[in-house]
Image (cartoon, rainbow, N blue to C red):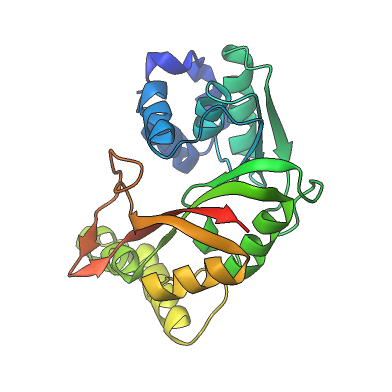
Length: 240
């Protein structure tokens, strides 16, 4: 069920695949205020120009638009961008721009942003390349919020969500990512705390805060650990 705070006509779900329908109901089942509250915890308000990279269905984009002067939501998944556009229109968010684009090659000018936000997407890209792009488009002193999955997230995917539900596809996906990560893969990988911090600093950022998902933003969605292994790391970093 979509929370009423989004003002979204649920007929949009008729245009989505069953997977995307489930995703929409999960993400928009939480209220708009839930997302606003988490953004306020990390100080992502009162900013001039903000990018929500890999924005998906736009739930974070709209929340950002209620707190900041100008927001760009960018993604490559057209069904999700359609939902994001509907959210924008339903809420009269004139300061929100929804764009198609790849976060490896942002269609934005160098030094043009005050903040970049990227939630549960970075680990599906080539992390170092994406962080370099975020650094490029940010002004000096601009802030970045990103998170990425640790080994606990993917082990949980294999065991709790995959094997326990007899979903062999999910189990194989988790195993593939864990093996690729251990062998030094660059895309679709798990990160360690030290490795993630090193990549952020290499991209030209100073880490302001770092923790497990929810420790900075509050109200966590994901497990903190699985079998003693961290699941999701989150950080706020400043462009040097």
